Image (cartoon, rainbow, N blue to C red; front, side, top):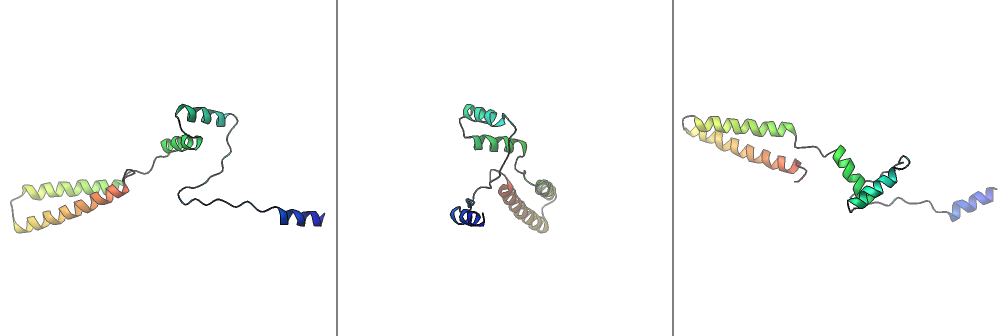
Length: 118
């Protein structure tokens, strides 16, 4: 018996996980009948079962939207720029407006990077 076990260990290589850097693999047990429902939906939508399941998961668990703090900061800076722009012109106000506009552009760039569409 020990020899049989040793023989099995030598002749049966352990399966290796395939590494794909662009995706995460997840083993899933489906309730009876669900695989067929997914297959039918995938065929109707002209895509793979994997794409069908990922689409359903994306719908239920969407990517996070732009951080609300960034949106609030953008709105606050826009209000401040409007306020300084409507006050009497001065060198100091011009400097403040220039600084606020630079910050506004930086925050918009951050918001664009955080956006799911990029």
